[in-house]
Image (cartoon, rainbow over all chains, first blue to last red; front, top):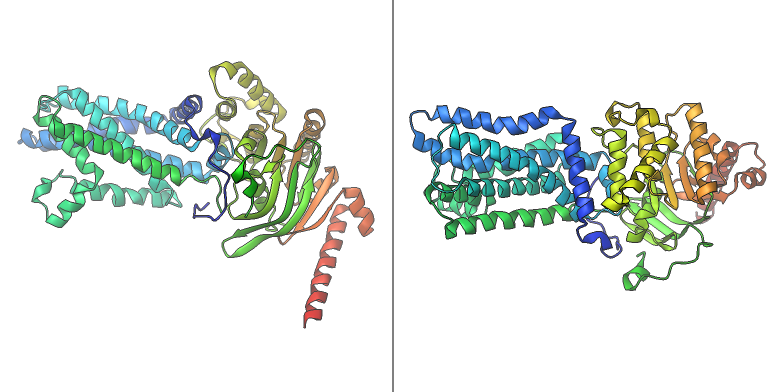
Length: 263
Length: 271
């Protein structure tokens, strides 16, 4: 089913356009119920980031300072990647199975559907981030100056951004193969430019300019603020706001790709 | 462009005596192809109307236009007194696509619970929803499989789950795209009995597509389609009498031959 632009004069926006909390939570509950029938996926989502952090800790056994830097950044990047993958595949399945068409022929607002997905995967992201942050701070000796709650907050915003990006690209993927290939395209580019490997001001000016408009850069910057400062700095607030706004913007774009009428 | 009236203000709904579906110079374009050409027909309320024709003739496109999921629809198409796709129609129409559209990784009851919560949300409606879901599962004869994962069911069972979703919330119009494909004769008979029961006891209108002509005999009215056009819009009896045929299938073939001959004559005269 394609979602090309159409010339149809669709009736005015549905009265269901406003969020309906009951339908949103019903959708979130449904998404979580689907996952509950798939315990392996849940286990992978929750455990893989922990295993990666554990590996990283001993890869940088000789230089704990490097682990502090990269570890904190990764706490923000893991939820983004996981949620991106899960959401893009889940919404692609929703599109190809015909259930999306069925839902949109029912009195379900697009906002309800998206908020339902964000709520369900956000819950999962909180659990994942709590596990990874707890492991890094108390067992792997990650040295963070600021509050772990702020780390968790950024991780949650990143998860939301991942959900938003996943939802958005799923509209452009005709198959699971394509959806998975969007990960290197959308995520790895940001990963290279976000300042994880080298500070962003050391990059070629052109690349630095690009990295300035990519949301993951601010996710990593925010994590580093928490790493180095005891209290909430103005930079941290700015970074968190930018990530949140990007997530909302992309969610809005994602909503625009859900069309009640398709060709 | 269709539905201009709806962009100004909602017209008062026409009384229930009016047709369930009314189409006038209805056209649908998909890509470079014109799938539906200048359709004009009405579907009466409270009856079963069969939509018949060979595969690829535009049955599904017409159904999608009626439920409001088809893009690039022009002309007039009124459904239950409103322009097709009107938001208020979403709770009043049940639509079953040809491929079952249910969640394979949920049980039958979980599937229906979710769709019921979309149609009739809120805590206060929980008891009513539970009743509705139980009834819908019973309607399609799947009570013994209530807690089975949809993905583990047979093809026929899955399409019945999909049908059960459309039966939730007692819709006034049911649009069913080949609901009996791949089902055994006993089940087909049971489903058709259910369809008649729904029309008679709930006063619902049913539009059912099929490319199996023997199912046509079970409908109150028939729309015969071919290559995006309506060949006939009549009762099965009237069709047989008019064409002097024994069966609806023979009547359909007769009408196709007539249409082909007429097209050939038209070509002849323009030359």
